[in-house]
Length: 176
Image 1 (cartoon, rainbow, N blue to C red):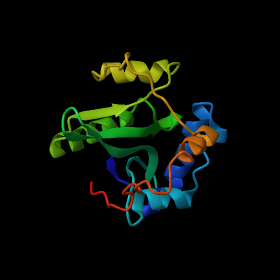
Image 2 (image 1 turned 180 degrees about the horizontal axis):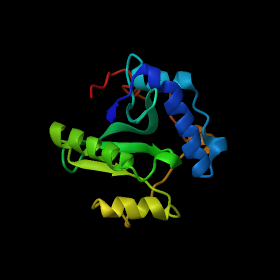
Image 3 (image 1 turned 135 degrees about the vertical axis):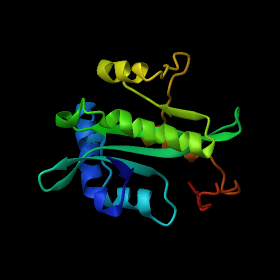
Image 4 (image 1 turned 135 degrees about the horizontal axis):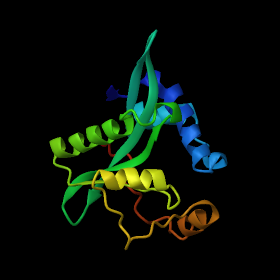
């Protein structure tokens, strides 16, 4: 079963983010706290959205996966899209269709809202995921390379802005 995440899902989503970071060999980089996740998903101005996958157990439902996403925008199509930040299904629940169901629900959201793109990144060495995505019809964007600015280089570039520069409109609320 796939459903929108609620505040009660924060502990499970946070734990699965840590599991994903460990799988991707980057556990030390996963510093987000449950409180930050709560604010990002359910604060006054949500920056992201999440779906959870559940399966029945003898005593109810157990959360076995999640998809965390946010809207992006294409200047070429003039429409919003979905960027999938994280997709994770716990190892013991893989192969039962949860990952595909999470992706299908996000595809449905795109189509329903008129979004023309659904994008995500995958590590080059993650062959099982790459094969899975290709089986759905996803194509790699081979001509594009992701760039990231973080830490000291990010701060150094930010320090080049003069105080008279306009402040970005971060306070504008986003609707989904």
